[in-house]
Image 1 (cartoon, rainbow, N blue to C red):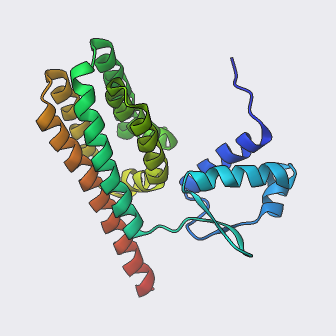
Image 2: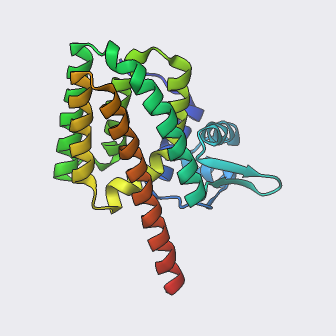
Length: 223
């Protein structure tokens, strides 16, 4: 059954996809009147949608200037990914002893779809969704809802950076191998090894994105 969406939810979902997909670069002003015309709605649902995206870290409001997409910041990336390491390794450590065969099979099924999408270059918009769904499946049995809610917020804020990593770096094959290794270690109940691999997995993703941003900055300055 299709889920009913309010106008504000529809605008928020579509705008989120356009921002994460790169249509709106960091620092782009999002004019409410123009968006209202674009979506054929009043300014009220547009305002509500922008407030939703602000709560997710994708939009910032400035006094007397309006709403802007957030800038791609190296310092912000490093902080987000450091927090991810702290929270995700904490949850993973609590989750592994509680993982059932059903949980492991669900994670394996997601990983197969993720691998196929990466290997064929298809479903690019779903790459980061598969990535998060895989990790969440391994974390959920920890039964730490408040921590999982924070992890969800961090992943939403990190999503545009994760997409950049998947699209523009050459480390997709390595990431795939690490996902399979994480699943294998979780299946064996090797908590310390699994958490260490997860820490390195997130840290190396951060380093790849930071390197990419610095390279792009240099290229921009050189033109």
